[in-house]
Image (cartoon, helix red, strand yellow):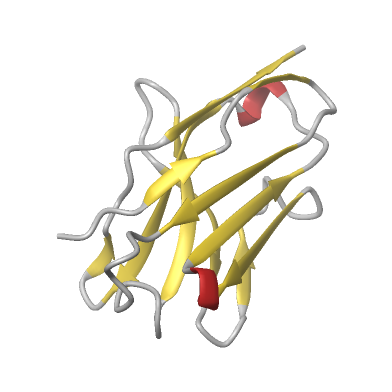
Length: 119
């Protein structure tokens, strides 16, 4: 199965910004078009939670906890989806994953990228 690749995680102070990137392997196009892509996050000991999704036509959905602070976008030509995170809070600390919304749920999970926000 195709696995997406996340990058951009880092350690920042509260109030800072980060941009996460999720890319599909060069040889694979089907995982991007047409499909909904999304970001999720997970803290050790807790379930993975939804953060944001974007459909192939650009319809966007956010979790209430990130509305107004995070922005998801995609560039189909580059097979890339982004998550711009502003006004970061310590509670945003997590491993962030991107995935594709397939017919049976989310799949093509990447390995994750760590985001740490210090107060």
